[in-house]
Length: 275
Image 1 (cartoon, rainbow, N blue to C red):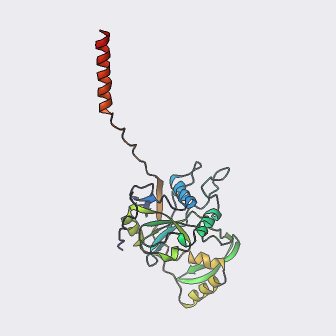
Image 2 (cartoon, rainbow, N blue to C red; image 1 turned 90 degrees about the vertical axis):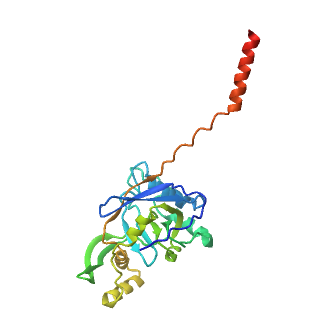
Image 3 (cartoon, rainbow, N blue to C red; image 1 turned 120 degrees about the horizontal axis):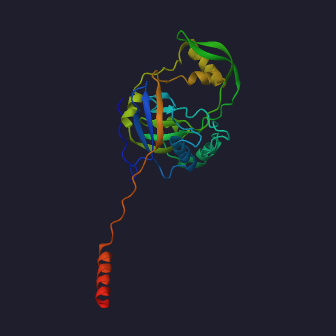
C-alpha cells in the first residue's frame, strides 16, 4: 500500500511528539508528529499530554492499534483505557471524560479541518454516546458464524476521548467524529506498513450479517462490540514508547566584536592617561 507523502502545509517541519510503534514485537518504528499551533486547544493539549505521559504514568505507551481501514483511509487506536489510575485521578487536559473535547469539536462547526490527505493525526472525540451498561449476552464469531453467547457481567464503557487516528489517504468518515491536531513529519512508511496488514473483514452478508444489522439498528450494545472487531489487524500492533521530541538549545549569539574592540581601546587610553 503506497501512501503519498503530504505536501508541507506549514513553514515548520519540526516534530513535537513521537510514537514508537511495533508490529508483533518487532523493532518499533518511529512516527513523529508536528502539532498545529492553531489546532483546537484542548484536543491538541490532550494528545500532547498523553504522548508525554502524566505525573502518575498515564500515556499512550502500550496502546494498541485496533482498526486498520485501508478503504476508509486511516488506522486508529481506542486510546487510553482509563484516566483514573492515580489516587486523585489523572489531570489531563479536558478531564477524565470526553465532554470538553466533544464540546470544543462541536463549537468549531464548519470551520474545522477535514481529513483530506494522508499523514493527518486526529483525536477521536465524538463517539461518546454509548451508555455504560450490563450485558448478559453478546455476539461472537463461532466457527466463522455470528452467534449469541451468554456472558454475564460484561460492561461496555463509553470512549473517553483519547483514541487517535492517522490517515493513509482522504478519510471523510472521520470528519464528523475527530479533531485534527497535527501531521506526521517522519514515519509515514511505518504507518503504511500498518495499513498493509491483514485484518478481520466485516461480516455483513448472510444471516449473521442480518442479525448484526438488526442489532446495530436497534442500538444493541452487543452489535457495537461486534463492530469493534471489524478491520482489526491480526497482528499485534502496539505503541511501545511515546514522548516529546527534545529540541536542541539555540546557540549563543556571537559576541559583538565592535563593542569588544571599543572597550579595549577605552581601556588602553585610560591606562595611558594614568601613566
